[in-house]
Length: 627
Image (cartoon, rainbow, N blue to C red):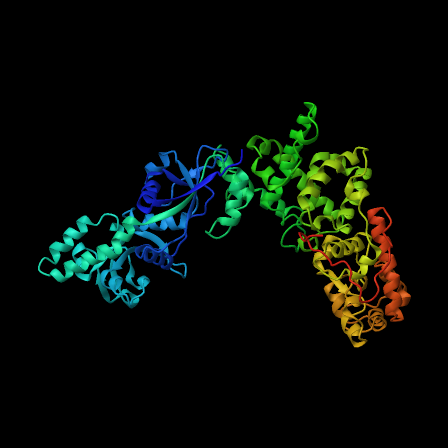
């Protein structure tokens, strides 16, 4: 039966803060530390003192499916840790911690200035200014150092001294630490001004107009009951949390595992001495000259996603063995809900196997001449790649399996399959590809994928997957640098600063008023070293080829036959380039690149009808964009 799993009630501020002090209300352990600066604290005090709203809180009742490790708010007494909390504060930590620190804790507040300098402060309300309607309330809130003495420049001139209650009474400065219990302070104030009825009247007005606002202040609290699902809690942090950076599934899983004594964050980040999984993956096969390895972009949720694929497949197989069918079968998935439902024992069972899968994925990508994260066609495709390699184990090294995996990979790239519906695609490839490697039917990623021949003309975006794919294929097929004749292994790639550059230079094309949509396509681009591209400059191909043949102080002369061989390794017809025949070159190279892609996908491209000039063509898609 459908029904609400939350209710909204106004709760007395004093009660909320007292429950924070006693540990009845605590925080999920993944919540970041208290970080509010002095000026934000003053603004918060000012708002409450005027009975202005400071926003709703959101709490989660404990005892449900979401079992987070709790911790008391910062500054709570030690006894709070021994209390089993009744609820966890999901949204409002910064506000409640700030108010607890300045009102109930009774100790100096350790905070920071807006410039991030650490300071210790006691907070006061200037009674006169607080009652003056012409003065902004924040101007009536004062912060003094630990000794409660205000000093001028360089700490030499001594100003306001509130180090003793008599100084507070004399200066008409009320301590915020006593806004909920002002009787003793009022008694001292009355004695101090016993012969001045005007001052006593001033305090009565202050008490009625300001202090009573603290006492009667109520905060709306959205309370999620213990029936609230893990996914709903995750949505809270992604959409509702007002503390700044939203939390992802990894941090929520971290908190749930912490309740069982497992430090997931340490697995990922290390302990300061032993490197964690993140560093191990980022350093995997890192070539000399590179700042990081090809797996440096793998995130903590990516790793959990791969683990979840194994766990959910295991659950599905168990259901199939039990005779369940159709809708009764659980889905194989790595989506957010699957991550939140990932048991600690399943994580422990598969974590080592999955890490080895990512290690194999790095080796596989290097085999394809993909060395940098920037050149990775799809970051999201690394997850199913690693999961598949983790599943098949050392069998991936067999030539037949490696050939199939390579075909699957390029079908994903040139079919642009990882630009949308990524979670569904990841699960499908993880289910189908290992079966194919064992002699089963082709996965949908291979059998159902096509590449449109006219797509080559529209590949212009450096960030598009297919564009990056063509570049990697050229290097894999043995492309040699025009100047040095070196093949682009990882040593040359990083040592020579290789990137994608124009074959017919931009300046030459612009001078002939060739449309940028034409000359900027991948057809007119190829991997070259930085020095080679610099020597090419903006000259006509015939001119820069002659220059390369002649040589210079840095480069010896190159025989024409050798240079023709270098050009041919890039699928460039030397005669057309030497003749500066741009149109013929573009058509010839388009056909050669198309054949290269067909070879990688092991299937013919779809010829179709090429668009006429001015017709709309399929827009290039980057990772994560809808198809």
